[in-house]
Amino acid sequence: MTAPFLEEPWAIERPILLGRGRIGFDSADLPWWQPSDGGAALPLAGEVSGVIAGTELTQAAVLWSGGRIELLAAHTPWGRIGHG
Image 1 (cartoon, one colour):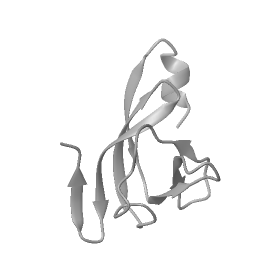
Image 2: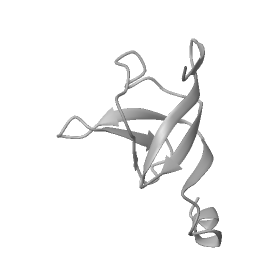
Image 3: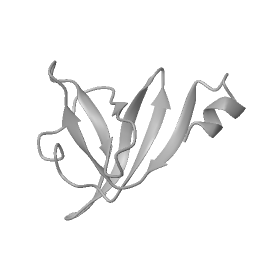
Image 4: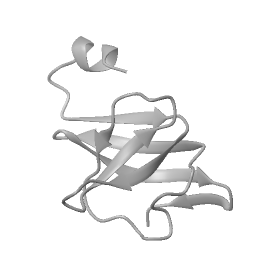
Protein backbone atom coordinates (compact mmCIF):
# COMPACT_ATOMS: atom_id res chain seq x y z
CA MET A 1 0.00 0.00 0.00
CA THR A 2 2.95 2.38 0.45
CA ALA A 3 4.03 2.32 -3.22
CA PRO A 4 1.52 4.98 -4.41
CA PHE A 5 2.60 7.31 -1.61
CA LEU A 6 6.27 6.91 -2.51
CA GLU A 7 5.59 7.50 -6.21
CA GLU A 8 3.73 10.78 -5.59
CA PRO A 9 4.67 12.08 -2.12
CA TRP A 10 3.26 15.52 -2.99
CA ALA A 11 -0.29 14.18 -3.40
CA ILE A 12 -2.51 15.67 -0.69
CA GLU A 13 -5.41 13.26 -1.09
CA ARG A 14 -5.46 9.74 -2.49
CA PRO A 15 -8.42 7.35 -2.88
CA ILE A 16 -7.73 3.83 -1.60
CA LEU A 17 -9.72 0.62 -1.79
CA LEU A 18 -9.16 -1.39 1.38
CA GLY A 19 -9.80 -5.11 1.71
CA ARG A 20 -11.50 -6.98 4.54
CA GLY A 21 -11.30 -5.36 7.98
CA ARG A 22 -13.22 -3.55 10.68
CA ILE A 23 -13.26 -0.27 12.58
CA GLY A 24 -12.12 -0.32 16.17
CA PHE A 25 -11.30 2.29 18.80
CA ASP A 26 -8.14 2.98 20.78
CA SER A 27 -7.93 3.86 24.48
CA ALA A 28 -8.73 7.51 23.65
CA ASP A 29 -11.92 6.43 21.77
CA LEU A 30 -10.43 7.43 18.41
CA PRO A 31 -11.48 5.25 15.43
CA TRP A 32 -8.96 3.11 13.51
CA TRP A 33 -9.25 0.82 10.47
CA GLN A 34 -8.05 -2.65 11.46
CA PRO A 35 -7.30 -4.89 8.45
CA SER A 36 -8.22 -8.57 8.88
CA ASP A 37 -4.85 -9.72 7.53
CA GLY A 38 -3.00 -8.24 10.51
CA GLY A 39 -1.58 -5.30 8.55
CA ALA A 40 -0.99 -1.85 9.97
CA ALA A 41 -4.00 -0.02 11.41
CA LEU A 42 -4.92 3.33 9.84
CA PRO A 43 -6.40 6.26 11.80
CA LEU A 44 -9.84 7.48 10.69
CA ALA A 45 -10.85 11.11 10.42
CA GLY A 46 -14.12 12.23 11.98
CA GLU A 47 -16.71 10.24 13.88
CA VAL A 48 -17.85 6.69 13.16
CA SER A 49 -21.42 5.46 13.53
CA GLY A 50 -21.89 2.93 16.32
CA VAL A 51 -23.65 0.65 13.83
CA ILE A 52 -20.57 0.20 11.65
CA ALA A 53 -17.99 0.05 14.45
CA GLY A 54 -16.81 -3.51 14.96
CA THR A 55 -18.71 -4.86 11.94
CA GLU A 56 -16.68 -6.99 9.51
CA LEU A 57 -16.39 -4.98 6.28
CA THR A 58 -15.55 -6.87 3.09
CA GLN A 59 -14.23 -3.75 1.34
CA ALA A 60 -14.02 -0.05 2.05
CA ALA A 61 -13.37 2.96 -0.16
CA VAL A 62 -11.47 5.65 1.73
CA LEU A 63 -9.72 8.92 1.04
CA TRP A 64 -6.22 9.30 2.55
CA SER A 65 -5.69 12.92 3.56
CA GLY A 66 -3.31 14.44 6.06
CA GLY A 67 -2.30 11.21 7.78
CA ARG A 68 -5.87 9.92 8.27
CA ILE A 69 -8.45 8.14 6.17
CA GLU A 70 -12.02 9.24 5.59
CA LEU A 71 -14.53 6.44 5.04
CA LEU A 72 -16.43 7.06 1.80
CA ALA A 73 -18.26 3.75 1.33
CA ALA A 74 -18.08 0.14 2.51
CA HIS A 75 -19.61 -3.28 1.94
CA THR A 76 -21.13 -4.81 5.08
CA PRO A 77 -22.95 -8.11 5.67
CA TRP A 78 -26.17 -6.07 5.23
CA GLY A 79 -25.21 -4.33 1.99
CA ARG A 80 -23.41 -1.17 0.93
CA ILE A 81 -23.17 1.91 3.09
CA GLY A 82 -21.96 5.28 1.90
CA HIS A 83 -21.28 8.83 2.83
CA GLY A 84 -23.92 11.40 2.07
